Length: 184
Image 1 (cartoon, rainbow, N blue to C red):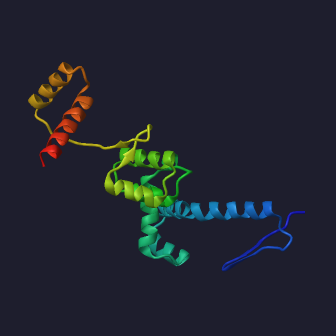
Image 2 (image 1 turned 135 degrees about the vertical axis):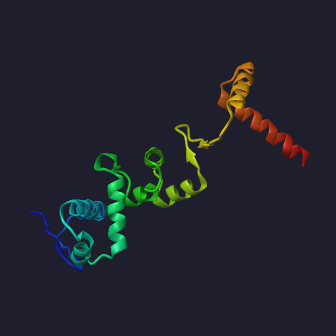
């Protein structure tokens, strides 16, 4: 017969006869509840917003959580519909990218999932603009506003060098960096 843990508001009592496997399973269940509760509260608030007036006032009373915490839960849950949420990442991972455009959210979460980044590592990478490609090398996104003549000229130069535009740009920038460093 399986040993039963007893939960109370401020305590968890475990029987002395609990097996190691039961203890591990209980830990996994607690983790799932803990890790899921922010999503659940966010979804609960979104539902309440659509169905009932004064949802935050009632939610604060029901949960004893402050207004800003509840707003954050709802904001993240609203930005990530259940089909976009990544079960292998925490709510906090999702919160880190919430303010980004959807494509960037998916990209950063994909990187975090692929490389096993903690929430703090994801935050560091976002702040520094560093992500890794599938090959493990750093990926840098550069956005440039060019006039058509520049792009056409660069494209022709890349074709003359028998390179695609990106490879040509990298080789030119690398050559310029070496030249600049050697002259100093």
